[in-house]
Amino acid sequence: MTAAVLFICFLFTLFLIRENFVPIARKEMLSAREVFSSLQNPKLVLSLFVTSLIIQVATGSIAPILTLYVRDLAGNVSNIAFISGMIASVPGIAALMSAPRLGKLGDRIGPEKILIVALIISVLLLIPMSFVQTPLQLGILRFLLGAADGALLPAVQTLLVYNSTSQISGRIFSYNQSFRDIGNVTGPLIGASVSANYGFRAVFLVTAGVVLFNAIYSTLSLRRPAADTSHSVN
Image (cartoon, rainbow, N blue to C red; front, side):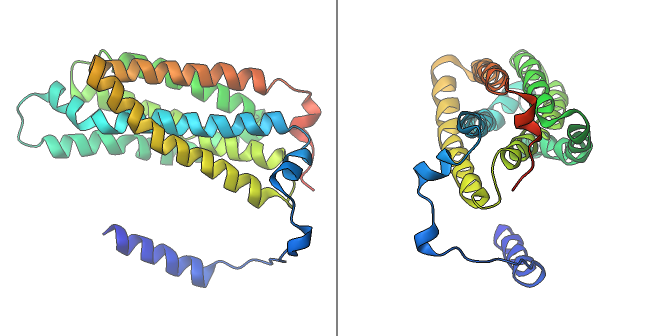
């Protein structure tokens, strides 16, 4: 099934996406040092990379223990796989519903505010997940968490566009993807380690702490002159 979906995506990309791409000569390619030197606010861009990493850590840390946590909450039921699948999928449904609306709101009030508020809401939702007593309670909280998470990566990507130029945007987004991949690797490792030593419920508290750090770090990093947030892309 997964292979079929990926093949369909390949066909859509191959036949439907067109771009006016002008290759850059090898001698004109900038080194990584030159890419960051050309940025108006390289520290901010680096902080956005770290934010992407932590977002993936927070998402991935829960994945290894979710089914086991649901089983503990539900007890001996015959359809535990279905219940776990539903609880795992509801954040995606919520993000699908919220992302367009939050993106529109971000265009009006700024992606920085959307990012910070979404991170704070995520912290406030992760903490009670450690204390739920039923799968339904967990599912409701994860649905609300998904609605908040729908704003995170779009806000980061928008800020990356604002703070880079078209000549280096490909490099910037590839670096950001590398940080996300690091988060995808470290997140499950952290979740598995915490659950093995302190139990399933501790994972949500540790994840909330990581996201809280991200919220504070992002708030401090995004404190810059208004001109930095509104300069046009070259």
